[in-house]
Every structure is written in structure tokens, then in C-alpha cells.
Image (tube, rainbow, N blue to C red; front, side, top):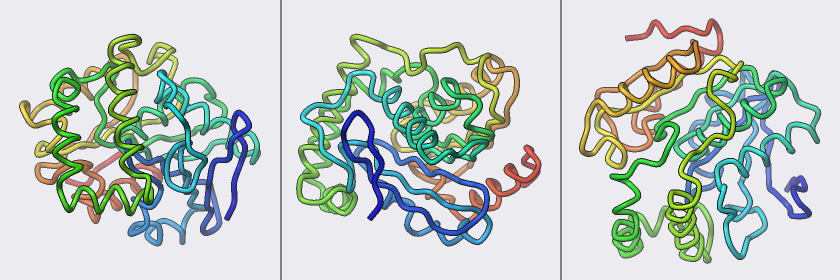
Length: 260
């Protein structure tokens, strides 16, 4: 198993295939295992890189997650890319991983060429999500399928990871309240944003949430594309994985999405 050091702690990563580096970034309470079913769809064209953020998967554990959680994860990405001497990489980030991807691209524009950011909240935490997170997380810990997911992603200490994530989500909203340090118009990387109208976490009360949010973000950035799936739960890249793979490869090839 391969590791890199970030602030004297060990972060797990794995590389599969050859070609331009394509980094996959997992979401909250998950690990790089969430991408295991689609890796082979990309590894024939790219050097696929799977990374476990600190506190998750096979990486070192933390007593407490840093309050600027998704910014710190972006810094982990930057440190990895610099240690490996990678530049102009492609990144696919899902949910919280999308926030980390944008932070990495904003803070180190020379390292990131193209981004696909799937099923994420936008610039600030979504109140409809955070105000129910304690209740929803407690329910999930007693749901057999959710428990199975958490344990598969992180192992026997999954409950501690879920609790720390819930805590940092609430603390971040209260004390920081925004995901990015730099203005979005400084984003140089090409970007595609994806989401589903049936997202059971972020679009639950507003089927147009992603379309409205992404349009606003693209206006602020000054460039970008978005694609909204009509069906499928959270995250869209897995509930629509066959179409997502086609769309992502088309975007990486020509910066546009013409698939309907």
C-alpha cells in the first residue's frame, strides 16, 4: 500500500493504469472504495488515482476533523500532487470531494487542468441539509444498508467517523459558513458540474436546486458546463454511472457535453 505524508500523517493512495493523472475524490463519511466499480472504465485511458482523505479509509485517523474541513482536504490534494510532481491533472470529485477539488484548483491552478464536480452544495452549506443532519445521521446509523456502507468504506471505527463528520459539518456552518477561500472568478480549470433532480439529500425540497446553483456558480466563475440528470439519487455519478462515464470522457476530450 502506498502513502504520502501530510502534516506528519499518512494518507493512503493507489494508482491504476497509465496516462494523464485522473484523481478521484470521495465524499463525506466515505473513502476511495466508493469508486471501485468504475475504476476500470477509466484506467485504460488515464492513470487513475484513488486517495483516502485523512480520517477516512486506510489513511491515519484524526481525533477531530479540522473545522475548515473541505479546504483542508483540498490542501491534502495539493500536497499529494506536489510530492508526486503531477501537473495539469484531471479531477472527479463527488459531493464533499467536489468541494475539495474546487479548493485545490483555486489554490494551485498550475496543478489542475479540468474538474468534474458532482452533487455538491455550491459556495455555502445548504441549510435544509445541515439543520436535519443530526437526526438523519442517527437514523442512518440504525439502517442496515447505511451501516453496511459506512463499514465497507471505513472499517470497524465507522461510527466514530460518522460522528466526527456530523460535528464538523455543524461547526463549519456556524463558524466559517463558506467552502472556498478565494473568489470563484479565480478558477482557471475547466469545470463540469453534475447533479440529479432526484437527489435524496440536496434536491429533496427543490428539484431545480442543482440547475439554479450551478448556473449561478458558472456565472461567477466566467466559464463552465453543467449537466442535470432527471433521475437518480445521491450522488448522481453513481445513480447514473453509465451515462456519467460517457459524459465525463466527452468533457475531458473537448470541454463540452453534447450527450442528451
